[in-house]
Image (cartoon, rainbow, N blue to C red; front, top):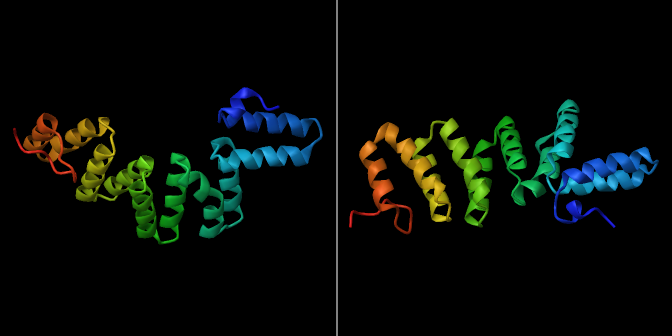
Length: 176
């Protein structure tokens, strides 16, 4: 029976267990445990696998095989890393669309990754729209984060957002 932490989704324990199982001479079981950790998006397994793919001159498809499952399961590291690989392959807009699609399907973490990408690319208006989607998805911290961004360009809009919130669809609510 696996330790309770593994059964509860603490995937870092899979890595530790795999190491101990391998030291005990069972390489096959250790590989299976590492695969479970990889599928769960465990950073301690993904990071070395990413390095191996990079050193081997791997393709975007190789990174997708490794990272798409954990990314679509909500792993932020996997989402960001896979989006960066799309960028490196000259397919950044596809990454943005993939993240937007995941966000629209209910993965609010994808919206966070997308929003960060948009602001880094100086696409502030698009980033603001994504902040509003995050707020609509039920993350109240997004209101203050968006208001702080608006403070830099439109303090009146920031104050209205803080005071009145948003309407369905993401627009700032009118004064009441």
